[in-house]
Amino acid sequence: MNTDEVTNQTNNEPDGLIESYVKMSALDKASYYYCSNYDVIARYACNNQKKGHKVFIDQEKQKPFTCRFCGKTAPEVTFNNTAHALSELIGNKTVFLKCECDSCNKRFGRIYENHLANYLGPYRTLFYTYGKNGIPSYKTGDEKFRIDVNDKEVVIQEAHDKCIVNTDNERFIVKLPRNKYIPLMVFKSFVFMALSLVPEEELPAFQETISWLNSDQDELPDFLSNASYATHVNERFVEGNKPLQVQAWVIRRKKGKKCPYAFLILEFDNLFYQVSIPCLSQDKDLANEPLSFPGFPSTIDVNPRLKDARQCVKDINLSSLNPVIGEMVELELKYDFRVEMHIASTAALDSIVSEKGIKPLKGFIDNKTDTNDTDRV
Image: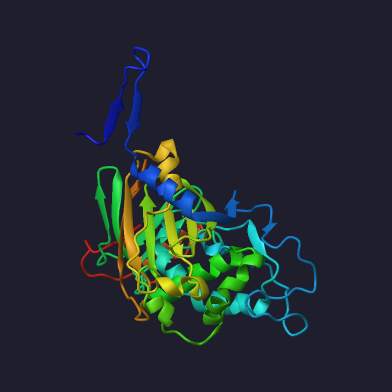
């Protein structure tokens, strides 16, 4: 019997009346799973990456504020800076937090966000992600390759001996190394964003996680080491011109269900992430359980414009404290118009990039004896 579709017709039904049972699709099953097991406790979207109307997670809070991460209040700590609930480096100009002190904001940004920035590095430049100072430039560690982006064009500078860019008809294929990052610090950056979004009444369940973020303890706590799902992040890439809005959800397990307690769902530009939010008090009984669950349905799945778009799905393990150096990212870029120039002197390069308002390649090789060895712009 074909179980994909079963039809049933009885003698008691009028002629032509057929009841049809159709097998659920993978998307239907995933939707059913999350609707049955989870509630959405936070959902925020950023409508404009360049600027936006500020929305505060804790809008009702009035001074004196108490920091949700260290528990301190003024005058012991200050609240002078506006804290981004979602990192500004992924394009958030909209969603903010009142109850995060300046000390925590600075410390978490310095410790964790630098690693997230290095992990995302090539993506942020080529996806036109607006950070604090506009779209960030990308350059390799030896500074012999550089990409700058503005509203009009992409400018790629490449030393003659680098050979990162390959052209094929109407596309570039580039293999770009990520700058050094520590996977666990990237994971902590995701967790920090998640706990910035969580409603205040939900925070008590995550106090041990907040203590872990605040401590100098870098190694994985037992409740993460023994849970195979805990630091494995689902990453999806979809092709297109910034097809995904910057938006995030926090979902929390319904009572009586046996599944991970909470997830952060994050979308921006061309990327989707599903991150388990560690919660010892609620997940301790699951630590050694072989859990299986579908990926959260993304805008990629439900937007008709994206149904035929190519995508890549990966499970990334962010549990390691070992620095990752030189990890490669391969991207294909389509273009409508291209101008390629071979530059033979730093003076010529300086003149060209000055007109475009960008910085020159520092790894430029000048005074070459072989006239064929010229750097490219």
